[in-house]
Amino acid sequence: GQNIDQPTEMTATEGAIVQINCTYQTSGFNGLFWYQQHAGEAPTFLSYNVLDGLEEKGRFSSFLSRSKGYSYLLLKELQMKDSASYLCAVTDSNYQLIWGAGTKLIIKP
Amino acid sequence: DTAVSQTPKYLVTQMGNDKSIKCEQNLGHDTMYWYKQDSKKFLKIMFSYNNKELIINETVPNRFSPKSPDKAHLNLHINSLELGDSAVYFCASSQEMEIGTDTQYFGPGTRLTVL
Image (cartoon, rainbow over the protein chains, first blue to last red):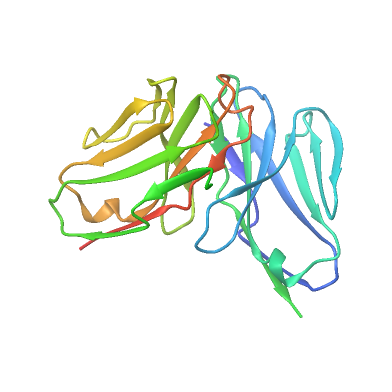
């Protein structure tokens, strides 16, 4: 079967750095997305990786290793507004998007 | 000038009723989706439409029927509502025909509660 694994919950301190990991086992691979979802709101797009390596976008970076079936989302200079769930999603060989259950990130002052 | 809009935002109804949720996107996208997010926050795709044609139906009960009058609209009709249908339903859209490689833009969600 197809599977996306992420930690259920993480806690970090305002101003710090946090890394949210995602591992996947899918039938083929055509890219990996990270979405942010604040409580009671819709998911919003953060990043898309299809090649190995690090993609940096302001305070957020996303890394992909296709050989390891692994990605992480790195958040720097954490702010209280970063408290949200972070969803990892992988596109398989049939171009279907497989979603992880999300990681709830709690930021403490 | 909302990109993806859904109505209603909240829907409370009795078991056995029939209800509809409407979705509209003004992004000019070719593909639209319906997702269900349950209490465990797991996003599950239900349907996808590309240019008014159904292209994914992820083993959803046939009580759920999507209807797309044009490529800017994808409505969801639910017959004979059950307690287990209580969830948040998200509509989304994307530009590319190759589903799953393009960014999806989500509507605000409809919280359905079945009593």
